[in-house]
Structure formats: structure tokens, C-alpha cells
Image (cartoon, rainbow, N blue to C red; front, top):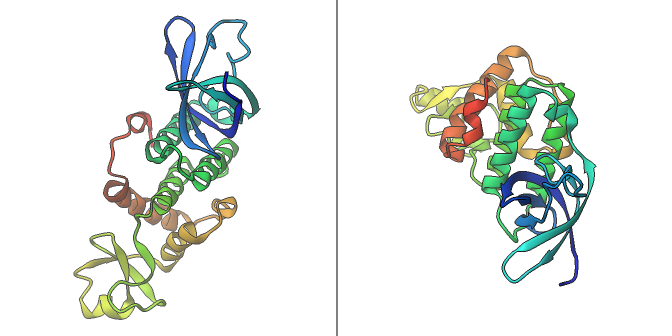
Length: 247
């Protein structure tokens, strides 16, 4: 047997293989997204039975075979039971796992993506924000991690950094008051200043503080509508779990 490899991460999917085994996909701090087999994990007396399910976070011990990894142990430190015990939260949580897993790469630095997923699941469990807002913040910051998102810090036409009042119709940037008025708002859509600030905050904030704000209903609604448009342009994938979201 090869030397044990230890990584820290979240199980993002788990599926049965054969009579008693599981195939696990994990998002890890050290190795990005990795897949591994958990032998006999579906046996009632297996030490891997309860820790090889989706949403489990912890230290994962595995070893490399000729063509795949095999899990020898998982020391779970978080099960996110506040999420998995509520059907609506679990549906959104499943979507978050799928999105993170789709964009994560093997043997890539995915520390920020893992931290975003972990922090979002924490907030989801508390119920301190609406599910719609949590989803949109997560999606928007995912775009930032992916490196494809609109520049919301300066006018795409003149470079001005203040009095930004509109988002371009192509969703690739924003416009200042002077350029928007000069063009008659023909190429952009006006948005409220607080919504613009929210877009900037989600891009620039530390993930630890990402969810530490409140929005007035009209600002939240406008922010959500913008992210729904950005989702189509920048995420551009039909996630299976999205069809179960009643949001």
C-alpha cells in the first residue's frame, strides 16, 4: 500500500458502486477536486458508512492505487445537519455542491472555492438570509473565482470610478452617469447606487465577511434580478439540481 495522503475537504457527491462500495467526489484544500472509492462503505458496520455522504467535511485519508484513489478513513468535523434536516435548504445546498464540483478542477488550487462553499453552507444553515439571496451571492462570487464577471468598479466607456449608475446591456461592465446620459441609456440599464455597491462588495469582500450585510427589499430584488441575468451569461450550464429549486 502506498503512503497515506491526508486532505481536508467536503464530500460533494456520493454514489453506490457494486454491492457495497461507493464512489466519492470531494472538493479539497490540498488537491482540488478528487474522486476516490470507499470500499465496503455501504456495509452496516462500516466505519465509512456515515462519513462518505454529501455535505460531510473533514480530514480525508486516502492512498493512491494504480489508477485511482481509495479512502481509508474520514475524520468528520462538520455534517451541516442544519442544512440537511430542512428540505428547502438541502435542495439549495445540493445545488451549491453541484456548482462547486462542476467548476472545480483536479490538482488545482481550489482553496477559495472550498472556503466559499463551506461558508455558504454555514450561512444557509443559520437561516439568516433568504435562500434567493444566498444563491445569488454564491453564484456571483463563483463567477469571480472563475475569472469571468463584469467590471463593476469603473465605467467601461470612460474609466470613471464614481457616479456609476447603470449596468451595460451586454452585462460586461457598468456605466457612469455622464456616459449613460450622453448615450440616452440606450446601451445600459439604470440600477440603484446601493445595488451597485452590493455588486462591488460581493466581488471585493473577504469570504469570511461575504454574507455580513442586510439589504432593503427593493435592493435585494434588484440585485437578484441582475444575478439571474449574469447566471445565464457567465455560468451558462444547466445544473440538474437547479430544477428542484422552488425559488
